[in-house]
Length: 155
Image 1 (spheres, one colour):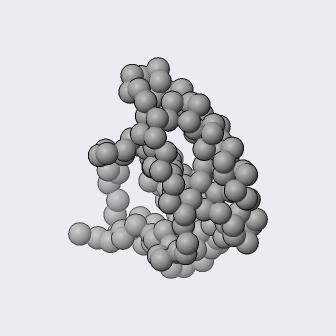
Image 2: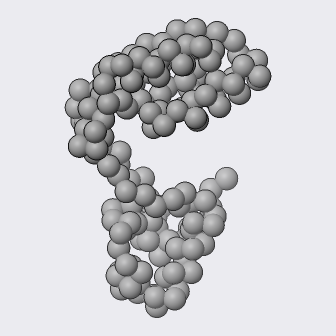
């Protein structure tokens, strides 16, 4: 369920998406509130779950992960116990930096990073022993468009 957001909330969300490293005083100046009022707004946005977390976005290649691979997964079995086992294995592998259940011809879409082919192979083998029936890998060549901010704006 969507959280009710006013115009000040939307400005804060846009600004935080653009630069989450901004000081509270800078944000207050941008939205025209006191620093205390701004801090309360941002805290409310976090507590409501609209802002899940504030993190740094790293360059995988520069951080030592030259291989970035999309992996589509079709599970062998779809009962809850098997799905939970696969999900637990995915959550436990730090090389899997993004994972989504999807609808269609496949069950799961993963984004995997690896230092080399041997590390990638270890991830793929582990997935195949945790319930994956079919794995299809797509080598990520170059970022076409970075993850973009949500287009929050008043209606």
